[in-house]
Length: 177
Image (cartoon, rainbow, N blue to C red; front, side, top):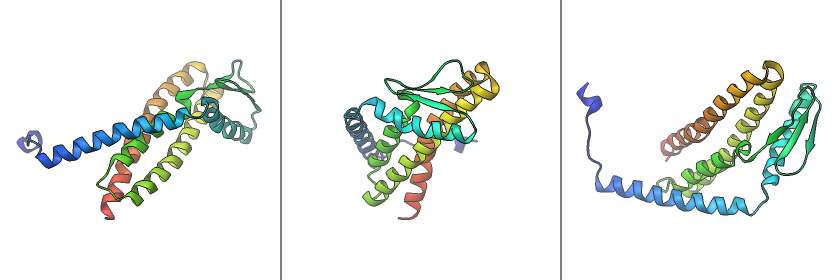
């Protein structure tokens, strides 16, 4: 039991690695935010609204897009439109994940680029699933259940898409040095 609660002071090397990681994490985070800000937010909302409308069509639901800020989806059977907002795009999760991967300088650049590419695809796919699941929950489970599931699912998405993917990527990248 004592071994579980024991504390060892970090070495100077561990402090240097952590400091370097935090510095590059901040620089990457700022740089990616600046890059994303070069595009209108509607662009990113459309990237998720179009496949969402297509997916809903696979379930036999008519969905119509209303362009503007935010992009809205008018879904058959819903009284109110579904708004695809900044938080719905997964941009924040993508920026944090890509920044963390880019800041992991102990892993070579080729593996970091592969991790960013895989993370981009993973965030997109998981986020698209989350959006569609939330809309289907509203339709089939009702507004109160859907509101709860949306809030919980959003937080789960935030944690698993960033921390979970980063952990898996890092473990794989270090294992195959």
